[in-house]
Image (tube, rainbow, N blue to C red):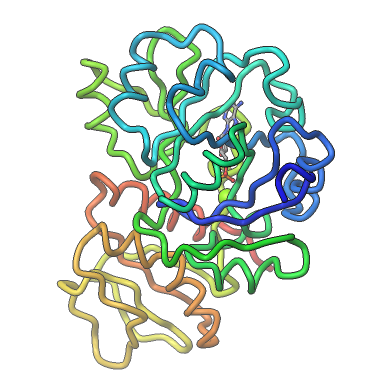
Length: 302
Ligand code: AMP
Ligand code: MG
């Protein structure tokens, strides 16, 4: 299907991706059209093995390779200098850089290994909406517009990859995600700068993204108060006042991340007016959860 220019949704450990042959401009243009994604927002290219990095990239710095060794397969994306002709211009929004990831899900690995080339794959949802973490979410969002959906069960991480810009002298984190910043700092042996609201056009870093139909409010546990149509998303350790209904009670930040997007969808399914989200502590994957909640909360509504 990929070789014929088709669109194939597949599971990864982060979220479900919508895949197209990264060398096929027509297929990638259709991918953007189906997502209604602005064409200047580049997508991540997925490959089966770290050894394929040099098929796509030039001038990867030693610390970039060290990050690949440490975290691939896994939820880390490296933005690197693009090798001429390796992917079509549509994938990179015309930039001279390309984002590369080796996902850890066995089904993603099997697909990518069989295909052998790079697969461009943003999240398998309409632009700006909640990312999918099950095949059912993909079907609900995109059925009819995709050629095939591979079902690999619910995603184990539940939020997108950490994106590291490896095109300069030192690593810069463009998006927080499945790999902890302190683990990246440990591998590179120094501090890591965050530029998660920066100049680089990155859809996941737009102020408003990841939003359900319900309004999202990020609140502190002590500020929870009953209001009409409100549902609470908070760790099980958070006491929820009488008169407020919980969506779910994740036990820790990992579980919170894993259920985040499905619970935002659940809120819409239950007709919620507002989701009162008490974020987990903002360290490790909790920082990525807070980032997504904050962006979902900043959607402007009339
Ligand atoms: P998505 O797959 O929709 O979660 O988003 C893909 C992410 O990859 C975007 O948010 C961008 O930040 C990033 N990205 C992809 N290609 C590039 C590139 N060439 N330069 C910088 N960032 C990129
Ligand atoms: Mg996305």
